[in-house]
Image 1 (cartoon, helix red, strand yellow):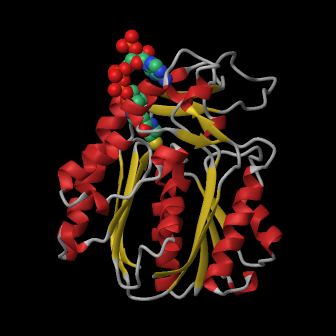
Image 2 (cartoon, rainbow, N blue to C red):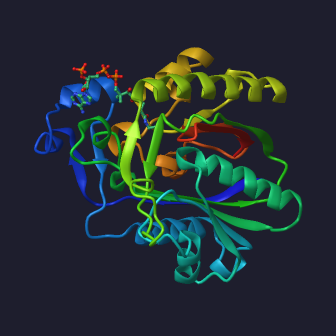
Length: 316
Ligand code: COA
Protein backbone atom coordinates (compact mmCIF):
# COMPACT_ATOMS: atom_id res chain seq x y z
CA UNK A 1 0.00 0.00 0.00
CA UNK A 2 1.14 3.55 -0.65
CA UNK A 3 -0.36 6.97 -0.02
CA UNK A 4 -1.12 8.89 -3.20
CA UNK A 5 -2.92 11.94 -1.77
CA UNK A 6 -3.73 13.56 1.55
CA UNK A 7 -6.02 16.35 2.72
CA UNK A 8 -7.25 17.88 5.95
CA UNK A 9 -9.74 20.46 7.20
CA UNK A 10 -9.95 22.24 10.53
CA UNK A 11 -12.61 24.47 12.06
CA UNK A 12 -11.92 28.19 11.74
CA UNK A 13 -12.44 29.04 15.44
CA UNK A 14 -9.12 29.18 17.30
CA UNK A 15 -9.55 28.80 21.07
CA UNK A 16 -6.59 29.77 23.24
CA UNK A 17 -5.91 28.47 26.74
CA UNK A 18 -6.67 31.93 28.12
CA UNK A 19 -10.12 31.83 26.51
CA UNK A 20 -10.89 28.67 28.52
CA UNK A 21 -10.32 30.47 31.82
CA UNK A 22 -13.74 32.09 31.19
CA UNK A 23 -15.47 28.73 31.67
CA UNK A 24 -13.56 27.04 34.52
CA UNK A 25 -10.69 27.45 36.93
CA UNK A 26 -7.64 26.74 34.78
CA UNK A 27 -4.61 28.57 33.41
CA UNK A 28 -2.48 28.78 30.32
CA UNK A 29 0.48 27.71 32.47
CA UNK A 30 -1.28 24.54 33.78
CA UNK A 31 -2.42 23.45 30.31
CA UNK A 32 0.91 24.15 28.61
CA UNK A 33 3.06 22.43 31.22
CA UNK A 34 0.82 19.32 31.55
CA UNK A 35 -0.06 18.88 27.86
CA UNK A 36 1.91 21.21 25.57
CA UNK A 37 -1.40 22.51 24.15
CA UNK A 38 -1.55 26.25 23.39
CA UNK A 39 -4.62 26.47 21.13
CA UNK A 40 -7.20 24.17 19.62
CA UNK A 41 -9.80 24.52 16.81
CA UNK A 42 -13.43 24.07 17.81
CA UNK A 43 -16.44 23.66 15.52
CA UNK A 44 -18.88 26.59 15.58
CA UNK A 45 -21.09 27.23 12.55
CA UNK A 46 -19.45 24.63 10.27
CA UNK A 47 -20.32 20.94 10.67
CA UNK A 48 -18.08 17.91 11.10
CA UNK A 49 -19.54 16.52 7.87
CA UNK A 50 -18.45 19.67 6.00
CA UNK A 51 -14.92 19.25 7.34
CA UNK A 52 -14.92 15.57 6.33
CA UNK A 53 -16.06 16.46 2.79
CA UNK A 54 -13.43 19.20 2.43
CA UNK A 55 -10.64 16.92 3.69
CA UNK A 56 -11.75 14.16 1.28
CA UNK A 57 -11.93 16.53 -1.70
CA UNK A 58 -8.46 17.88 -0.90
CA UNK A 59 -7.07 14.34 -0.75
CA UNK A 60 -8.74 13.49 -4.06
CA UNK A 61 -7.34 16.60 -5.68
CA UNK A 62 -3.84 15.81 -4.40
CA UNK A 63 -4.07 12.24 -5.74
CA UNK A 64 -5.25 13.35 -9.19
CA UNK A 65 -8.16 10.89 -8.93
CA UNK A 66 -11.88 11.46 -9.31
CA UNK A 67 -14.39 10.35 -6.69
CA UNK A 68 -15.67 7.74 -9.17
CA UNK A 69 -12.22 6.08 -9.13
CA UNK A 70 -12.61 5.08 -5.46
CA UNK A 71 -13.46 1.44 -4.65
CA UNK A 72 -14.08 1.94 -0.93
CA UNK A 73 -14.37 4.67 1.69
CA UNK A 74 -13.41 3.74 5.25
CA UNK A 75 -14.07 6.40 7.86
CA UNK A 76 -12.89 6.46 11.45
CA UNK A 77 -15.47 8.37 13.49
CA UNK A 78 -16.42 8.05 17.13
CA UNK A 79 -19.29 10.47 17.34
CA UNK A 80 -21.44 12.72 15.23
CA UNK A 81 -25.04 13.74 15.54
CA UNK A 82 -26.23 10.86 13.36
CA UNK A 83 -26.15 7.41 14.92
CA UNK A 84 -26.87 6.21 11.40
CA UNK A 85 -26.31 6.48 8.50
CA UNK A 86 -22.54 6.31 8.77
CA UNK A 87 -20.34 9.35 8.21
CA UNK A 88 -18.72 7.59 5.22
CA UNK A 89 -22.15 7.23 3.51
CA UNK A 90 -22.81 10.94 3.90
CA UNK A 91 -19.36 11.83 2.57
CA UNK A 92 -19.70 9.39 -0.35
CA UNK A 93 -22.73 11.16 -1.84
CA UNK A 94 -21.35 14.63 -1.19
CA UNK A 95 -18.07 14.01 -3.02
CA UNK A 96 -19.75 12.17 -5.90
CA UNK A 97 -18.41 8.68 -5.21
CA UNK A 98 -20.51 5.53 -5.71
CA UNK A 99 -18.33 2.91 -3.99
CA UNK A 100 -19.26 0.93 -0.87
CA UNK A 101 -18.29 2.53 2.40
CA UNK A 102 -18.29 1.91 6.12
CA UNK A 103 -17.28 3.50 9.40
CA UNK A 104 -15.14 2.09 12.16
CA UNK A 105 -15.23 3.22 15.78
CA UNK A 106 -11.95 2.49 17.49
CA UNK A 107 -11.54 5.88 19.16
CA UNK A 108 -8.21 7.66 18.74
CA UNK A 109 -6.43 4.64 17.21
CA UNK A 110 -9.06 4.45 14.44
CA UNK A 111 -7.03 5.86 11.56
CA UNK A 112 -4.26 3.28 12.01
CA UNK A 113 -6.83 0.45 12.10
CA UNK A 114 -8.54 1.88 9.01
CA UNK A 115 -5.22 2.01 7.12
CA UNK A 116 -4.45 -1.58 8.08
CA UNK A 117 -7.90 -2.68 6.88
CA UNK A 118 -7.38 -0.75 3.64
CA UNK A 119 -4.11 -2.63 3.08
CA UNK A 120 -5.88 -6.00 3.38
CA UNK A 121 -8.56 -4.90 0.89
CA UNK A 122 -5.83 -3.84 -1.54
CA UNK A 123 -3.70 -6.98 -1.02
CA UNK A 124 -6.63 -9.31 -1.58
CA UNK A 125 -7.65 -7.46 -4.74
CA UNK A 126 -11.00 -6.35 -3.29
CA UNK A 127 -10.10 -2.74 -4.11
CA UNK A 128 -7.51 -0.73 -5.99
CA UNK A 129 -8.03 2.75 -4.50
CA UNK A 130 -9.43 3.54 -1.09
CA UNK A 131 -10.24 6.80 0.68
CA UNK A 132 -9.27 6.43 4.35
CA UNK A 133 -10.85 9.21 6.36
CA UNK A 134 -10.92 10.30 10.00
CA UNK A 135 -13.45 12.90 11.15
CA UNK A 136 -13.80 13.73 14.80
CA UNK A 137 -15.50 16.24 17.06
CA UNK A 138 -14.20 15.26 20.50
CA UNK A 139 -15.06 18.67 21.98
CA UNK A 140 -18.63 17.29 22.00
CA UNK A 141 -17.65 14.26 24.15
CA UNK A 142 -16.61 16.38 27.11
CA UNK A 143 -18.53 17.77 30.01
CA UNK A 144 -17.74 21.47 29.61
CA UNK A 145 -18.24 21.99 33.32
CA UNK A 146 -15.12 19.86 33.89
CA UNK A 147 -11.67 21.28 33.31
CA UNK A 148 -9.91 17.86 33.41
CA UNK A 149 -10.98 16.84 29.91
CA UNK A 150 -12.35 19.96 28.18
CA UNK A 151 -8.92 21.58 27.84
CA UNK A 152 -7.45 18.61 25.96
CA UNK A 153 -9.46 18.37 22.76
CA UNK A 154 -9.98 20.02 19.38
CA UNK A 155 -11.97 19.08 16.26
CA UNK A 156 -10.85 18.22 12.73
CA UNK A 157 -10.88 15.84 9.77
CA UNK A 158 -8.23 14.42 7.46
CA UNK A 159 -7.98 11.83 4.71
CA UNK A 160 -5.47 9.77 2.75
CA UNK A 161 -6.01 7.98 -0.54
CA UNK A 162 -4.15 4.71 -0.81
CA UNK A 163 -3.43 2.22 -3.56
CA UNK A 164 -1.61 -1.08 -3.71
CA UNK A 165 2.18 -1.29 -3.63
CA UNK A 166 4.70 -3.32 -1.65
CA UNK A 167 5.45 -0.35 0.65
CA UNK A 168 3.36 -1.54 3.60
CA UNK A 169 5.42 -3.46 6.12
CA UNK A 170 2.77 -4.37 8.58
CA UNK A 171 1.12 -3.31 11.77
CA UNK A 172 0.76 -4.26 15.42
CA UNK A 173 -2.56 -3.88 17.18
CA UNK A 174 -3.20 -4.25 20.90
CA UNK A 175 -6.53 -4.20 22.69
CA UNK A 176 -6.68 -4.50 26.46
CA UNK A 177 -10.21 -4.53 27.77
CA UNK A 178 -9.79 -1.73 30.26
CA UNK A 179 -13.05 0.04 29.57
CA UNK A 180 -13.20 2.17 32.69
CA UNK A 181 -10.14 4.36 32.04
CA UNK A 182 -11.75 6.33 29.22
CA UNK A 183 -15.41 6.16 28.24
CA UNK A 184 -18.52 8.07 27.27
CA UNK A 185 -22.07 6.69 27.47
CA UNK A 186 -24.65 7.78 24.91
CA UNK A 187 -28.35 8.24 25.63
CA UNK A 188 -30.60 5.48 24.31
CA UNK A 189 -34.31 5.98 23.73
CA UNK A 190 -36.25 4.69 26.72
CA UNK A 191 -38.58 1.71 26.29
CA UNK A 192 -41.59 0.91 28.47
CA UNK A 193 -39.48 -2.01 29.81
CA UNK A 194 -36.40 -0.02 30.78
CA UNK A 195 -34.88 -0.72 34.16
CA UNK A 196 -34.51 2.74 35.64
CA UNK A 197 -31.00 4.12 35.76
CA UNK A 198 -29.45 1.28 33.77
CA UNK A 199 -28.90 3.15 30.50
CA UNK A 200 -27.85 6.58 31.66
CA UNK A 201 -25.81 8.76 29.34
CA UNK A 202 -22.61 10.27 30.60
CA UNK A 203 -20.05 12.63 29.07
CA UNK A 204 -16.40 11.62 28.96
CA UNK A 205 -14.90 10.00 32.05
CA UNK A 206 -11.11 9.70 32.03
CA UNK A 207 -8.41 8.48 34.36
CA UNK A 208 -5.75 10.76 32.88
CA UNK A 209 -2.79 9.25 34.69
CA UNK A 210 -3.68 5.69 33.71
CA UNK A 211 -4.31 6.70 30.08
CA UNK A 212 -0.93 8.44 30.07
CA UNK A 213 0.86 5.38 31.46
CA UNK A 214 -0.83 2.90 29.10
CA UNK A 215 -0.26 5.13 26.07
CA UNK A 216 3.49 5.44 26.61
CA UNK A 217 4.09 1.79 27.51
CA UNK A 218 1.84 0.20 24.89
CA UNK A 219 2.82 2.41 21.92
CA UNK A 220 6.53 2.19 22.77
CA UNK A 221 6.59 -1.60 22.93
CA UNK A 222 4.35 -1.97 19.90
CA UNK A 223 6.60 0.26 17.76
CA UNK A 224 9.72 -1.51 19.04
CA UNK A 225 8.46 -4.93 18.07
CA UNK A 226 7.21 -3.64 14.72
CA UNK A 227 10.67 -2.27 13.88
CA UNK A 228 12.46 -5.38 15.19
CA UNK A 229 10.33 -7.76 13.17
CA UNK A 230 10.78 -5.70 10.00
CA UNK A 231 14.55 -5.45 10.58
CA UNK A 232 14.70 -1.66 10.90
CA UNK A 233 16.20 0.63 13.53
CA UNK A 234 14.84 3.89 14.91
CA UNK A 235 17.34 5.88 12.83
CA UNK A 236 15.93 4.34 9.62
CA UNK A 237 12.55 6.01 10.24
CA UNK A 238 12.00 9.48 8.83
CA UNK A 239 8.97 10.30 11.00
CA UNK A 240 7.11 8.75 13.90
CA UNK A 241 3.63 10.17 13.28
CA UNK A 242 2.13 9.65 16.73
CA UNK A 243 -1.36 10.36 18.02
CA UNK A 244 -1.28 13.99 19.16
CA UNK A 245 -2.83 13.79 22.63
CA UNK A 246 -0.19 15.25 24.89
CA UNK A 247 3.34 16.51 24.23
CA UNK A 248 4.57 14.67 27.34
CA UNK A 249 3.21 11.35 26.01
CA UNK A 250 5.02 11.97 22.70
CA UNK A 251 8.21 12.83 24.61
CA UNK A 252 7.78 9.66 26.72
CA UNK A 253 7.62 7.49 23.59
CA UNK A 254 10.59 9.36 22.10
CA UNK A 255 12.59 8.78 25.28
CA UNK A 256 11.84 5.05 25.18
CA UNK A 257 12.60 4.55 21.47
CA UNK A 258 15.45 7.06 21.07
CA UNK A 259 16.25 9.02 17.93
CA UNK A 260 16.15 12.78 17.51
CA UNK A 261 13.29 15.24 18.19
CA UNK A 262 12.96 16.00 14.44
CA UNK A 263 11.73 12.42 13.94
CA UNK A 264 8.75 13.14 16.21
CA UNK A 265 6.83 16.00 14.57
CA UNK A 266 3.89 17.51 16.49
CA UNK A 267 0.73 19.54 15.97
CA UNK A 268 -0.73 19.05 19.46
CA UNK A 269 0.38 22.55 20.47
CA UNK A 270 -1.93 24.20 17.92
CA UNK A 271 -4.76 21.68 17.45
CA UNK A 272 -4.99 19.79 20.78
CA UNK A 273 -6.17 16.17 20.66
CA UNK A 274 -8.35 15.69 17.56
CA UNK A 275 -8.87 11.97 18.32
CA UNK A 276 -8.33 9.68 15.31
CA UNK A 277 -7.97 12.70 12.99
CA UNK A 278 -4.71 13.78 14.64
CA UNK A 279 -2.45 11.33 12.77
CA UNK A 280 -3.75 12.10 9.24
CA UNK A 281 -3.82 15.86 9.99
CA UNK A 282 -0.12 15.69 10.91
CA UNK A 283 0.59 13.46 7.91
CA UNK A 284 -1.09 15.98 5.59
CA UNK A 285 0.89 18.85 7.07
CA UNK A 286 4.18 16.99 6.54
CA UNK A 287 3.25 16.08 2.97
CA UNK A 288 2.14 19.62 2.08
CA UNK A 289 5.32 21.09 3.60
CA UNK A 290 7.34 18.69 1.37
CA UNK A 291 8.94 17.15 4.43
CA UNK A 292 8.24 13.55 3.38
CA UNK A 293 9.75 12.16 0.22
CA UNK A 294 8.79 9.10 -1.77
CA UNK A 295 10.51 6.07 -0.25
CA UNK A 296 10.79 7.51 3.28
CA UNK A 297 9.89 5.06 6.03
CA UNK A 298 7.18 6.30 8.37
CA UNK A 299 5.55 4.89 11.49
CA UNK A 300 2.02 5.85 12.55
CA UNK A 301 0.91 4.99 16.06
CA UNK A 302 -2.29 5.78 17.93
CA UNK A 303 -3.93 4.96 21.26
CA UNK A 304 -7.25 5.54 22.91
CA UNK A 305 -10.36 4.23 24.60
CA UNK A 306 -10.62 0.45 24.78
CA UNK A 307 -7.78 0.53 25.74
CA UNK A 308 -6.64 0.21 22.14
CA UNK A 309 -3.37 0.90 20.40
CA UNK A 310 -2.27 0.42 16.80
CA UNK A 311 1.03 1.06 15.03
CA UNK A 312 1.99 0.63 11.39
CA UNK A 313 5.18 0.85 9.34
CA UNK A 314 5.20 1.82 5.67
CA UNK A 315 7.12 3.56 2.92
CA UNK A 316 5.65 6.86 1.85
N1 COA B 1 -6.56 23.28 34.98
C1 COA B 1 -6.05 23.37 36.21
N2 COA B 1 -5.99 22.34 37.06
C2 COA B 1 -6.46 21.17 36.62
C3 COA B 1 -7.00 21.00 35.34
C4 COA B 1 -7.05 22.12 34.51
N3 COA B 1 -7.53 22.06 33.27
N4 COA B 1 -7.38 19.71 35.19
C5 COA B 1 -7.10 19.08 36.32
N5 COA B 1 -6.55 19.95 37.22
C6 COA B 1 -6.09 19.67 38.57
C7 COA B 1 -6.78 18.46 39.18
O1 COA B 1 -8.00 18.86 39.79
C8 COA B 1 -5.76 18.00 40.20
O2 COA B 1 -5.84 18.85 41.32
P1 COA B 1 -5.50 18.27 42.80
O3 COA B 1 -4.08 17.84 42.75
O4 COA B 1 -5.75 19.46 43.66
O5 COA B 1 -6.45 17.15 43.01
C9 COA B 1 -4.46 18.31 39.50
O6 COA B 1 -4.72 19.30 38.52
C10 COA B 1 -3.88 17.09 38.79
O7 COA B 1 -2.64 17.53 38.34
P2 COA B 1 -1.54 16.51 37.90
O8 COA B 1 -1.57 15.30 38.77
O9 COA B 1 -0.25 17.23 37.81
O10 COA B 1 -2.04 16.14 36.46
P3 COA B 1 -1.33 15.19 35.47
O11 COA B 1 0.12 15.46 35.42
O12 COA B 1 -1.77 13.78 35.68
O13 COA B 1 -1.92 15.70 34.08
C11 COA B 1 -3.48 15.17 32.36
C12 COA B 1 -3.30 15.53 33.83
C13 COA B 1 -4.95 14.91 32.09
C14 COA B 1 -3.01 16.33 31.51
C15 COA B 1 -2.63 13.92 32.02
O14 COA B 1 -2.89 12.91 32.97
C16 COA B 1 -2.89 13.39 30.64
O15 COA B 1 -2.68 14.06 29.66
N6 COA B 1 -3.30 12.12 30.50
C17 COA B 1 -3.64 11.56 29.23
C18 COA B 1 -4.97 12.07 28.75
C19 COA B 1 -5.25 11.78 27.30
O16 COA B 1 -4.38 11.87 26.48
N7 COA B 1 -6.49 11.41 27.00
C20 COA B 1 -6.93 11.15 25.68
C21 COA B 1 -6.43 9.85 25.21
S1 COA B 1 -6.86 9.55 23.56
